Image (cartoon, rainbow, N blue to C red; front, side, top):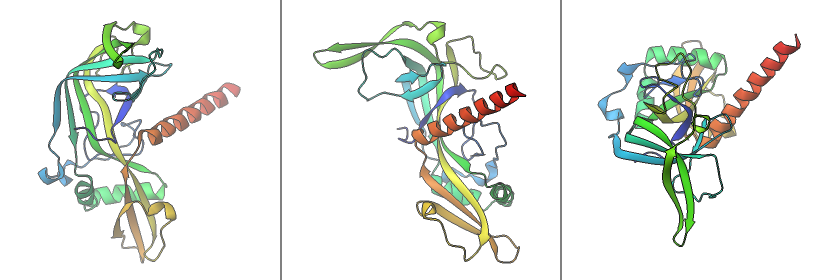
Length: 258
């Protein structure tokens, strides 16, 4: 079954936009300078895919029509108006054995060179270890009813266009005018820290929960330290999204004042 670390994307992405084993400077903008080396991953690094037919999920969306969170299995207030049912002909969740896959990537000279350049920029990275793809996904209005056996969720008519979650950018291959689509709807990532320092340099307290690889750089006693976290939680990505939105608003306001 899908991992508890699976994060619902705010906007679904076209198939093949993301790849297992990809390293991303920004998980919320996958096309912004990613690194990927398919040759570093073998069959031993892949877990058996989990496939579920006639998939259903209860999803909340925000004021701008972006997918916000999966609520399946949680207690839901029947008065909420920000809910839709996400239905699909099929859900496939593909994932990596994170530790072995990451160790293999850390042996790739091209990956090490790229991560060293990211360390020089003090850039946090994100390692894609799980992908959820839906086939023929459709959004329906969610009808929440209270009864003697508790709260039930049933399918209503297709939600109005103003209530449907947005699709991806207009320059993507996904049709934003259709309420049914196939693509990537969720992913799981691990945070990666890359640091250049002396071999005897102590770790920070925040580093203790990370799994580390160490590589000599050939520059005296400098080494590249690469640490991978456990599964990143949805709240951490939501905070990142909020920080990006604040930065975008600040940039917009600054340009307006000029």
